[in-house]
Image 1: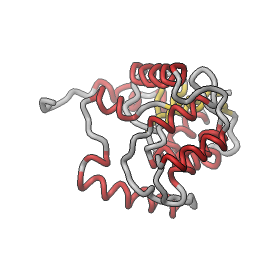
Image 2 (image 1 turned 90 degrees about the vertical axis):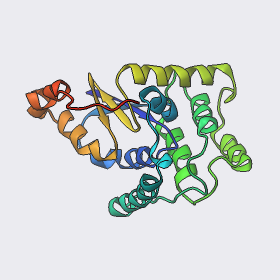
Image 3 (image 1 turned 180 degrees about the vertical axis):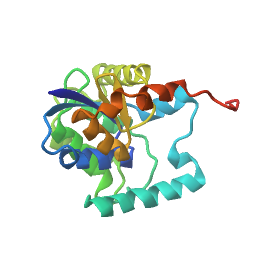
Image 4 (image 1 turned 90 degrees about the horizontal axis):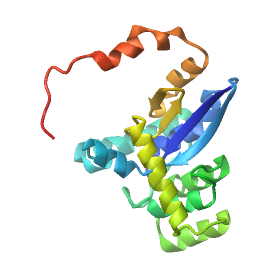
Length: 213
């Protein structure tokens, strides 16, 4: 049975869509999943990138596309009242409900749906208080342990080559994005393509031109 590490940040609509779609995308396969919150903003900083919501044209396209993807895949999704937002309170709250940097599917689902269903402010203080009461964390979300786990999860993911969310790590491979779920399924089914030059050779393609960051 393969072990999947699902790296997520609640700020990402693509992470939400992938989370919701994962059970049906991998239906019939034998696998286990651990859910690890990470800070997407740190991924961007490490790679010198802007987020999709920080690029004007891409921002509006992203919001249109994720709502279309929800419609096309039967996944309810509503844009929160404001986006992007600071996800740290949500990430730390989730980790305070978990153990050693992992959270269970119920916690992940509850926080994702808090953000991506209903169209409300994801970090409104009153809503955050209600969410914390519902989840009943066993540790202090503002404590050092939750902060340290988020930092460790994020640094480990970056060191392993993750650059965005959702990132689904299996063996030595990382599958990025909602649209990578069919690739992930094929890998779990033993598709030989993943042992071919098409996969391994991608890293050897030379850059014809580079731009300064």
